[in-house]
Length: 301
Image 1: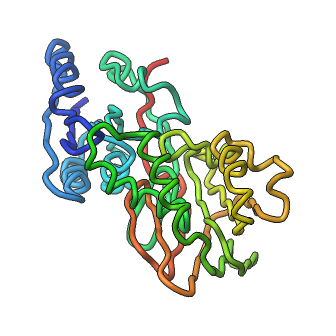
Image 2 (image 1 turned 120 degrees about the vertical axis):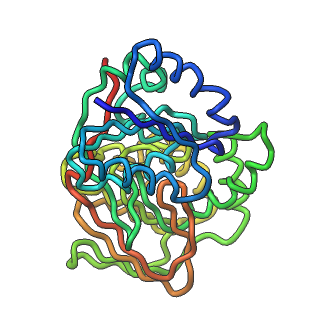
């Protein structure tokens, strides 16, 4: 089987070309693996490479070196391609998608990756874009915008950057007027803190946002959180991070949870949207499941 390695040199706070990639390259060479490798040069480049390599028609395993954003970029180029599989050597700041499947150590092992098995998993479509893990709209989508600014400081990464971004966000305006429709029938209109659509379970460097999400059940976990009194936020955020929000009485009257196929959101003014770490401002969006979208490589063990 042919392998393609796609390295995002801007992933995390250290260039994967100087850290993870050399040992993986050496291991693949030692085992005489048929592989080629590329370095991404601009946003969306990984998608272009993946599409081109899959179009050759043979069986190919395409591994990314980066975080959730890099993984989503590659997967976006492989939707519906039965001959192609996507894997990841986690080098990002959060590496959250893989937490649903196993440890970071397993995914960083060339030996275990070479014996990986594909699992058919779902993806999320938002307009003409795709995501693998979690999409959000509202306060928690503002946080990555702050995190991007904090990444200028090399000592800040992962959970530390996310937590500081959270604090900066809380000091600003929180809560957005939104009308949310799930599967065309359930409709909610209120001032929401955030709306979450989960295929994976974790984001933000370990926030257990969708603890009951199943990545291959053909459904998304939708979590809507109304704006609470400000003094309640620290406790609520702590419970949310630990994944206890779905069953905690602290969220009575605030949280709505549904499992479904499509969520549509309309806002009174532009609201932050987050697709696996890629952020933008939107007044209208939708998050829809794409069942059995790709083949994701899970390392041996």
